Image (cartoon, rainbow, N blue to C red; front, side, top):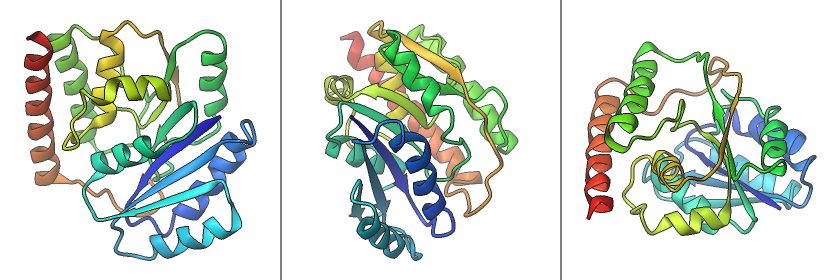
Length: 232
């Protein structure tokens, strides 16, 4: 059984299609699974749409919370999951759900976890630079080599999330990145599987320009602080 964890913020145009895509490519493969959608204080009709979807699909569960950012939404969803596996994704549909089967087959064949890898990305140049900087920082600070550590397309056992949770503070801006780092340092066998990445069709990127730069600086400071903690 798998819990799909999906944070969402102001995605009224995309959320219905996002749920439908998960049902078609995840729940069809693992029918006893669930979808946990964390509505991070959306200001549009996302919450209303989700509440209506719950009535149609009992495998969808919605958590409504005050806006606290993407990181807090991911943590809230993962903490509330009930499945043996967690599939952590974004709601913008830039990575399609079809490759989920490849990730699932990888763990069936013996991988401890499976991450998507975006080798070709349809994102602004600044986000591509950010990914390259993260890759370099993980190598320098932690000797960890993951091509796309912060990808919002991770399949992991919930037991590994519980083990790593004590090292991921509630204030962590990028818990998915911290999770990847912790698993890699512990020698977890991670299958890295290339996934397509399409243009964003709806909504707007919630972190841009100066806010994105500030986010990156704060996230790097958290990584450096984490390195000091594990070195003690």
